[in-house]
Length: 258
Image (cartoon, rainbow, N blue to C red):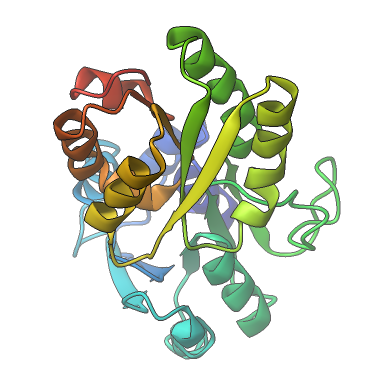
């Protein structure tokens, strides 16, 4: 199988998945380096690979490097993956992508970019038409929707003018937050930004929401909040705080709006 086909499989191209599965070389095991500051490949990812004919231990294997919340370790972990001579590096989140880029210009890097700065402005790619370099993958422009979700929340509870904005303690919200604050200003809303560390602190965040008397909550787009959504939804329900989330499944799991 050609390396390009393997990369298209990992970045979710509809044609690439079945094509790659049909063209596997018998006996060949491709090594996927998984680089992240949090956890290893989720079960859904492994299941999807299996559904398309990639059998772990037979045609594909993982080299996992996770920083366990210590993002400063990502450069050394990326360098270790390069020394391991993996076929592809899948980098989850901006810090991991940059660490992988600094470690290799030859091994293909498949990114999972949840949100944050523009890829061109960040130096990840040269342009969308001609990305250049060795990075491909998926960029989810969720941060552009946070301000719109604030507007939807305001329409859902129009009597509420004091709204809490829950953000994780991440650099990317330097980009996500300003449009939300501007939208709040134009709508005459009083916004209170409440940060949550990467390792939790949700009880304290909801204590702060109660102390400031916020009548509603905007949960910003974040992989951390997607991971911890059941905890957040439960706290919002117990504290009786109307909240809006980024994904529809959060509403199906008990959140007010998704």
